[in-house]
Structures are given as C-alpha cells and as structure tokens.
Length: 58
Image (cartoon, rainbow, N blue to C red):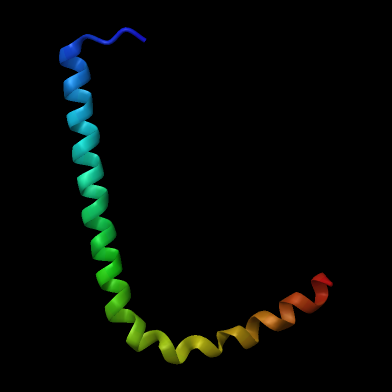
C-alpha cells in the first residue's frame, strides 16, 4: 500500500491516541476490579452452581 507520508503520520497519531485511550480505560477497569474485588469475594460459592452443569455434559 502506498500511503502519502502526511496520511501515514496522521494515521499513526490516531493509532497512538486510540492506544492511550485503551490504556486509560484498562487502568480504570483494573481500578474498578481492585475496588469491587473486596465486595465480590463472598460471591465465590457460585462454583457450586457450575458443577451440576458439568454432569450432563459428561
């Protein structure tokens, strides 16, 4: 693909911006996970509800 240098620079800038935005949202998700993890730990017994589903598959 032949892309003019100016377009190439603009495109790489867009990609960089998108990557930065993705990184920021990933950081938000990690922070949310860190805060919700403490409150959602008691929900771990959901593993018991998965076991009956495995039996018919076997």
